[in-house]
View (cartoon, rainbow, N blue to C red):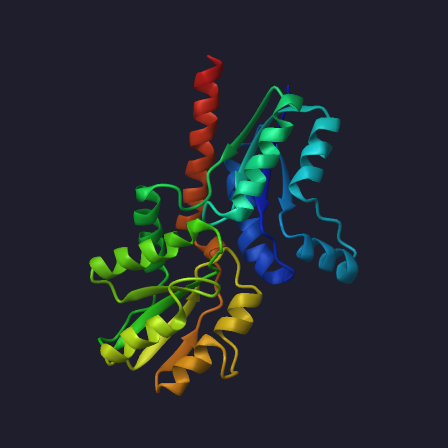
Length: 264
């Protein structure tokens, strides 16, 4: 039976960060499943269209990838999402996998990064592993994407866990809660002098470059500067972090074990 591994991410139009993050995660997963052929797909139609227009690259969305695999005769397919939360993008992938299941003997989907309490604890370990050494009046803020989906609460949960542990790390979101304004108040109350900004995203793409690290007044760097706090951005996506790669791999191996047990 032909076996495949399909890795699905939101995608990015930045070639370098794609290699450092998305392709690095794909390779880590593929190395653990050498008996499977590797395929990839992006969920962002905007990014897919941009890459086609700008670079002549043809990237599959999940539906196209699943059709391609079925037509090529693959019948045992493991799918791993590289999304951070169980939000809209992941639910779209899950829905497509469910719809295509009858066309395969086995079609199984691994969970996104944050799916249970242990995932949050392991993410915190991974975040701390990439933090610089901090002075007493320094903090690290991780910028998450945010969501209109109820899963946006994952960002607030993560921030609360960091606070409860007494760690000098905060989490904010571009498009939902916790907002940067909330973090600015906390930083001023703590008399913080300097903040290190890092993406809580798979890749350091548009949000990291423009909303986080840009010199304009509206960026997080600019808003920190307005209240007298120095900001140093770090353009490193989570996909570069070996501990994050391992967490995705553990999710994929868990679904493979479950599939094997159900078939036995």
